[in-house]
Image (cartoon, rainbow, N blue to C red):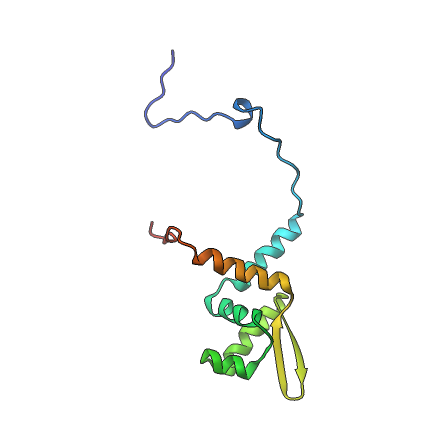
Length: 131
């Protein structure tokens, strides 16, 4: 009879133990979709840009209005909008001297609202890098 030391763990394949599991189906999305989604999360993964996306998800707004609402300079807001636009998260339209921005589509608005709703739920705090 073999004994395992306290530091060893026995690894048992799930497939060998539980044949009643439904087999995993093929991935629905291709590698390009995963890469693109990761790019979208990186673009939205900054608090000031996320706040900007949330604001735009509530309706179209011109750059000067956004800057006033957020207490930021026009150039700062424009830089954030440029990045979000390059990733396809926001769209713009020009009307005279004003440039208006809005989220690109309902998918973006839903993504932002879902992420914020999930983050607002009572859940364990995020671990810091030190944990």
